[in-house]
Length: 119
Ligand code: HEC
Image 1 (cartoon, helix red, strand yellow):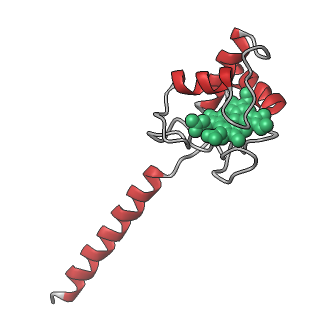
Image 2 (tube, rainbow, N blue to C red; image 1 turned 120 degrees about the horizontal axis):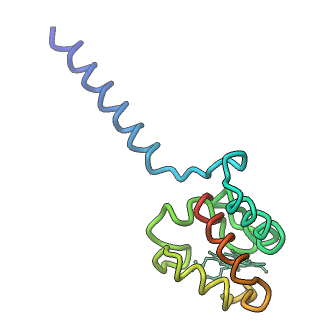
Image 3 (cartoon, rainbow, N blue to C red; image 1 turned 180 degrees about the vertical axis):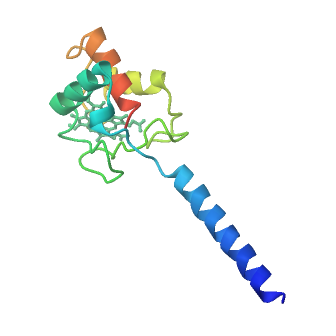
């Protein structure tokens, strides 16, 4: 009479483990659910960033995949994942990544940041 109880406890533990796992998997917001501002940021991304970065995957293209960029504590480089760091990377570039300070205006930059929060 002990075994069924142990099994159900194991099953419960397995379910909890799976749920906890799902919670940590980064999930992009579907394009169809983007706000107008996020959609404009998506267009900026397509025009200037998509050639080197997958937005919805962690797989490297030229630069690292950006899936879950702001859902994780650290950027691929190990720097803290916050707006200031990401903005600065985009403004000034990083190694092979070119600087966009003279390419994007403030609005495009803000839209892009809003979009990056959805990947
Ligand atoms: C020519 C290719 C190229 C383009 C275009 C490019 N990137 Fe990058 N990006 C890279 C590379 C390479 C790295 C890795 C740099 C390193 O850490 O050595 C990188 C790194 C990053 C990082 C991570 C920084 C960190 O600290 O880990 C972010 C975020 C990023 N890019 C966003 C963007 C955005 C947004 C755009 C468009 C405005 C963009 N990139 C355009 C190549 C590119």
